[in-house]
Image (cartoon, rainbow, N blue to C red; front, side, top):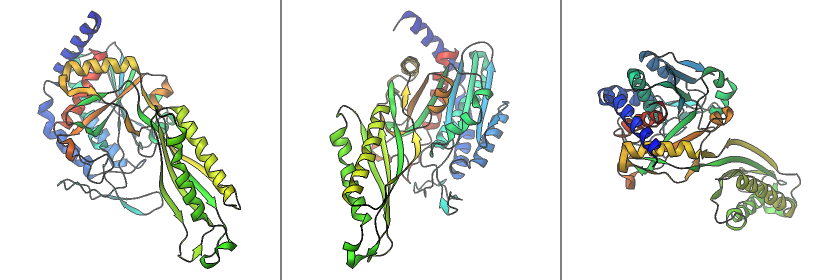
Length: 416
């Protein structure tokens, strides 16, 4: 480590220590906040109570939060000259029935896009992200003598549907906040030990693309199959053939996946349907590989349709596209050094995460470097369940403390 970096790390450590010195005094308040968010989860782009509680809490810290779009919230803490650091927390929940067994488990329901009532839960830990950022805002606002510059909190809706970051950009977030020098994000995860933080230079979260494919047959009686074209047999052939894309077409040095999560066709055992629908999820750590997978899927589907004598061309609908999260090397190195200095053995490497995020859309829209790290949420990783599992509910402590601490420590690498 160079003398300059050592000096910066020392200043950052001292500033973070001052800012976080009395973090423990707010534990009761933050636990109450967390349990409220956990028990009041809301679906993507419908985070109305959530965003209002965030606004009220920030106002209670003496800040002046602003709405961006319908449910996005930003708060700017301007504290003299210096860099601008922004931190994002996502705020939406999932259509999942919670099965964590916690005494504060969610029993909430909501109407989904089709108008059906569905259970809702924070099964991905976004409530942890909210309270961690609120805790960091409270600490930064209370200790302005320890740092200089501008800290920006961004509470983003609709990460789960890949709509929220785009919505913030469309609503003009660039006009509502000063352009950051660096943009941060974090995610609570099950595979990192509880209280640990992990960073990753370069690709860390994969691209993801959802594809709805409709293939067409010709309906007839099941006992007279020769009179029709069976879309179930066609779709089944497609499913099997798609499994060869990663194993036979993608460089083995790359990481990628193709998943058929749903296959829908027909309504009766003795009726051959007119069409079948496949829902496909693809992931990669390279936009070139993502493009290669897309082209392979379309080629295979069209070829199988031709082989089955399908009467119509297949239809492809692309939705819920997540870009790659490709962490800036310099920003990540600076955060990693700050984490090592402050957290010691509880700072480590994240590795590539087989999940996807829309986090990078906002900093990319501003031409801003970013880094996104992982936060361990379970003391016993052998018993931890993965994100989106109905039983996902991280340990309250030290997770809420470490989430707030990580934000402050990273910010102080620029703002000390």
